[in-house]
Image (cartoon, rainbow, N blue to C red):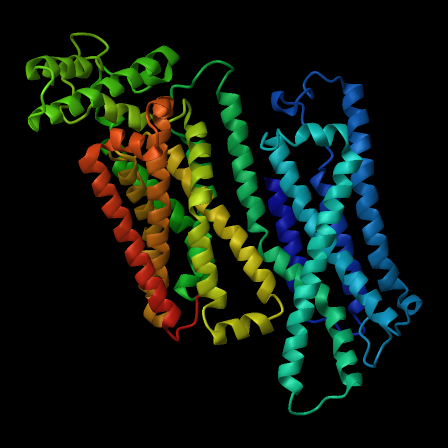
Length: 586
């Protein structure tokens, strides 16, 4: 982590001091060499070829020192060969421009197709190196944290094939960026010169200047998303700690991430989710205060709501970790199933259905189920409003909080797809004026693709936080827990709302983000409740039937109305913003 911070500071210094603006003819070779060298050095410092001898590395732990050294050499040769070849291509253009018919790297006159191709090749090479550096660091963090166990065997067996595949993908990405930049530049040129009737010669000169400066704009854009590496690092470090704290076949006594683990979870949320909201305040200067503000909000959420969780309200005679044992968990789910069945029978009896069991017998069954929560007969009185069903739902579908977090993250990722599309359309494509700005901006189209990706990461990180704290959040049903997390998410936005009038930012964007977050987390929490009783799926023809069994008729109707209300409010605000003349915050 310390190495990545130092590297990030060094890269920022290069971008802000060494390359302050569009390159000129006299300094372009130096800037190009610095950028190529910086990309190559970042790849080398990442050590992506270093296999980690952990149990998750599929055989790395059993390998001897000689085997590890051989493996490192094979991986290092594959990575360094690819990086060196790409860097050599970029340096060839930078150091010998006349080989491509270029008088210098920033031509002021019309140039041949070969010269333009040379500039495009140089820019693509620089972009590849910086994209590869991002991938190398992300892979290093993920590999050390055991996040890439499915891909690690392929990397161990066929490093050359993996490097070739990654090289091709990154070349396609760099080429796509160049194409998007070029398309925007052509449209901008046509818009600026449609009345003046510029000659083809001037257009070729403009194309040469654009290709010479392409990589400078591109690497600044790539670096603006370097915060994603921080999220990967936090998640990998957290996974490493969980793996060390959870021996094979045993469960730790903690219900939630504690101390350093909770700090990592909150930092992951702050970087991946919280930073998406900074532009709502209308000032990039708030980046410095937004992170600690988000972390403080989540800590306050944990402190305030912790005593109101279901498991925290149980008496001393009930061990909060009791459902962790396999035998007790099976009994808990069976008792919860019995509890729901008896309640259904009581409901039928109240409606006068014939054939229902005697009420006294059913009430005794409920009493026995309730008393099962005690560890000893002499334990304290159990809360009347806490049922065995509440305890089962509060424990969640998985045995460990990490597994609950992963499950919730996957659910939130997919439930967040409609929200991502809605926000992206609103920010970049909502009307002709917004589309015009997007199409004529150099990074407009590329920013759309990046926005789609980072919003999906944001929903997944929010779901991860919800699942990690599932057992200590208030509420007997999942949607109440979703409300608690949304409040923690919205608190910094509420503070930023104090500056909205000064910053002249439409507050509707903030409200829309909060409503979409609430909707995504509500759907995630409902599916988490269903996953808790996934073993009963065979008893129900549809998921709705299982959900109806868990929430009962009154509960499911309330949740449906609740979701429809959220969707209606979000849609109403979305249409108002889409029809307004206000500029989007991004």
